[in-house]
Length: 411
Image 1 (cartoon, rainbow, N blue to C red):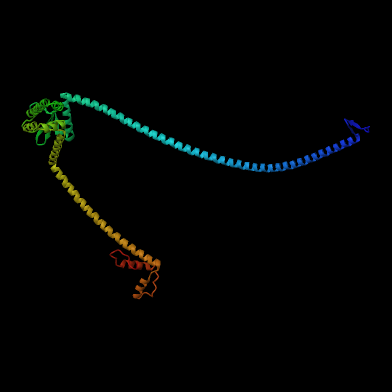
Image 2 (spheres, rainbow, N blue to C red; image 1 turned 180 degrees about the vertical axis):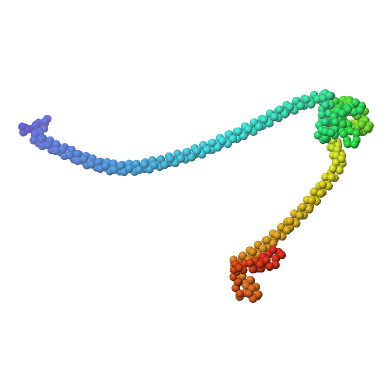
């Protein structure tokens, strides 16, 4: 069927040869494909082995990584717990410090508020005192502006000084004299007429002198002061110096130390006039000194009045002291006897103690030698029986007593 040659173009091809060529080509192609398949299989096996090795290596690395991750996880958990504890401790410390700080701050705040309240209370009390002082100053100004109120103020100061320094029966206020005049105070002097004390407060002239700015005003103020003081001195001398009824000296009380100092510093002529009139101008301090002097005089008078009673009391006191002295001597003798008895008892106790120590240490050499010297060292001590007790008692009664109360050698 394929025996006929095939002509293609100008060439003639044998079909059998063509078939052989084609068969050879097919075999060659199959061989090549087989070789390629074998090479592919070898490469795939090598890749599979490589992949298996890589997989095992990767699995080992994954296992290592898993172990590391587990270690990291454990370390992370430990660190997290430690961090939690540290954070809790820090939070506790911060909370404690914050609580202490808040407590201290609240305490300091309370202290500051209490101190502030105390200061505010002090300020309120000071403000009240200032208000009261201002009202008192206004009241004092009103008192000093009124002559009658000013006189009552001076008389009140004088009465307070006298009441504080003298007993009630030593003075009298507003007493009436035989001429129907009534001095402010009469101080009673034992065995003598009373002393007159009259309070005056000449303020207008001194106030004008203080406010004077020129020589004319000062001269007018000085003249006013001299007129007022001279009138008061003359009034006291005429009204209250009664011979035989009052003392020949009277006290004019000026309830201001500054006015008293101004009188002594600038108005010596008024003081001379007061001395001639037998009127002594006194300030509160001088009146207090005079009251203390009168108090000493009254005390001396009462002491003289009670001299007999005091002598009797002193005699009784001396008798009591004599009895006390005798009883002290008796007590001293008693204590002397008691001391002697105690010394004897101590001596006996020391001897008993020494004898007991010798018995305890078996130290009888001194007594053996003493007995040997007497010829009794070799003889044994006789045994005491009950029948020998009365003889021992009789011997003890017949033995002489030791004057010091000491124990004898055989006792």
